[in-house]
Length: 159
Image (cartoon, rainbow, N blue to C red; front, side, top):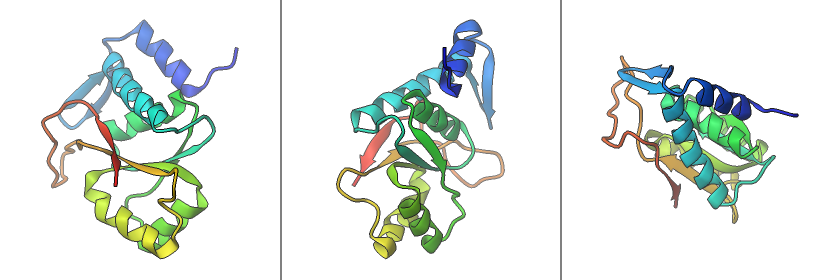
């Protein structure tokens, strides 16, 4: 039987659901909680048409959202593509175009960069391509960012 990383993670989540899987600042998520967040995002990606083998960009800080986004993409057999949040507009335009992204999950803080980059390349968004933005962010020590009150990841299609 073939397994991918999501299958292996789900096996661990089933075996030790209450064990801590991820610590992000003051947040501690069990395997079951991280699996649930990844499932919610995976179902959303599937509902907007992301299919196995397609590329999903992730322009996020390291944290809960990043881990959940990777797992979500793997759960639907999509290909997660890291998009470094430090990239400038020309680099973002290149990777958006060259990586053949069908969806982009990004931190709300990067909305301006995401909106500005496609104008330069014309490659994203195109009809059938969607940008997905987590509605909350993880507050990390040493970063001047606020976490929203909602403890779950909700995703929405950015227009």
